Image (cartoon, rainbow, N blue to C red):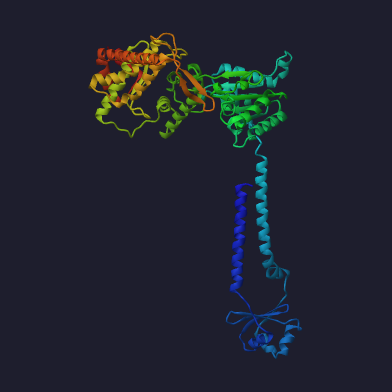
Length: 603
């Protein structure tokens, strides 16, 4: 029963109860006195009666003082004859204004039946209401094992492949699935079988769910979608029951598509030692495996699943015959980012100075979701200014908001802190500018954002899939540029460099233990152990001795100290540029790429 109908029933019951209370109260306050016929005659003869009403065998008199009295004739003839017997004259009867009333059925019901039946009816309504509630609870209990899969039916809100930018290979793979569903004979004539499952893998925000929506929009077949977490309950067997119910619905609608989002919620490796053999998650996974490729085949049902963690999935789920195809979605490159920005900018009034190619250059490492959020933040910023169009400044400023957080305008630095921050960021920018293997500087700012007091934005000129050792060493020196600039300019260091030091030491250790880019040779150190039921790197096994650990520490220190000396040499040799950058930051707080390049062009 819906909450609204429940409220209506409770309101009606409350009104009835209040009415009953007031009616009872009114009856009690207007109580009629019972007297004998003789006493009634005395009152009529005494002239104290205002009106007399004859209702059947009852004489009801209203006194001049407002009180009422009634006397029963007990079937002794007509009232007029009875009163005449007692000596009441005709003049006395005329003065009493006698009125004869016939007792109606409604009067009988109101006076006799209603007081008796009302409590019974009220109890009956209450018990019927409770019975309906119990039936609703029973029906919910019976539906406990049914899947909560939803079917897409609104064709007006469907997504098409044209609405998805980038991911060309993924769209090609999924396009074949759509073609299989639309024209199965084309492939069956060649002996080809329809793939049973497609696994979409990739970082969060790369468009796994969006692509699946596009498949639903392109394929003119029923489309069911459910999250992996919706299968799992605290009671063993419920998840397996929901899987059976889901595939039962799909069989009736075949050919169709089932989309399971975040399948790692139920598809993690079995035998992890957590929960034993009766673990609800494992029971659910076993049922999924059976339904996908068990003794009974499900012809015409294609399962599409999405996950961020393919490494923790059970091997039985990944074998051919279950998930035949695995589609990897990577972060978009510059062309894809520009295309994604174009799609998200279609419904926004952009000014002519919005250069989406420039925005794509500045958004290296952004996912499709990040880019959508970027354009949305730009529109919100324009709305706060009561503007009618989104400007290029709105878009570029939103990049920093997505990366670092909003500006902390309430955080006001004193002159000394502002000067230290200016030289710190100038040190980062100068070292990056002077090292040929470092990425070019796009922006320098001393405006606080998020937890950062200032920042230097450096971006690669092109997308990379591999990094050279020289580039890593340049990053190390650039990270220490602010630390060295503080030391060389003020003869002291501040806590502002703590995050730089942490990032620098982490990168140096990665170069030694993971990439083999040190004097220890082509070796990697340590093995990361995956704990499937925790879904993260739980521990790292040391496959080296204590002596080797000391050598690793020494090599990390060597890399960090070497990078610091490189940064120190640049800061000392180019002190004039350091001062120019710092003074410009103190004056303007922000230096964009063109203005930054102009500082060095004037030399």
